[in-house]
Length: 267
Image (cartoon, rainbow, N blue to C red; front, top):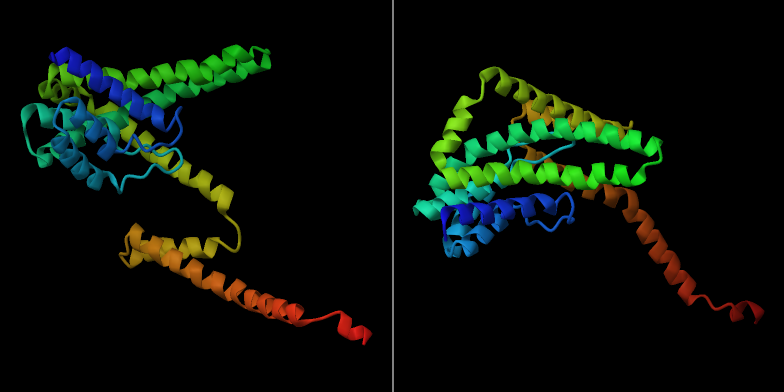
């Protein structure tokens, strides 16, 4: 299989992984473990694909997209890194080293493309006001999907076809002011996404728990995983305190009702 053919196939795998959470539902094909395994099967080395995918998956487990936040794109990074790892015969640790800068590049592309696609939303709104519903549908589904597909296919194709030197040159050629601006935009989107989530869930009964978790994480050095575990345990205890007695009362009441015979009153 020629290098160009491999680049095309791997690029299509990237497009499929991107469509998983945006058009095809949530089938978890965009996880690095799954995409790397698919790459391994295509390139005839599933064991190397699984090894690289498992290593990259462990590293990416802590990267969670919250609201409008844009984390490093480990889907793109994992696909390209796994391909390089299999083609060059390197170990999974080398794949991780390749995946990190590519994931950061994918993060910058994600911020840029989300900015462009936001303009399509305004055009769709204008088309709806004019009664052009088919045009609005095209803006939402067709053009947005095409742009996202190109965002994944083109970098993956060029990286695989031209090699790691090309990727390194592209990352090095990005101006510092552009990188800083996109990083600032990503942090701003993170804060905005958290604000949107809080605006939906914030109330007087829940906010104390939010601040308990926040200050415990900030001042006690407990990580997010530990805070989540404590939150689940507190929720279970509170549910038992709130609903446990009611369940027992209802059970006792049902037992009384079961023993009651309405005919006894007539006697």
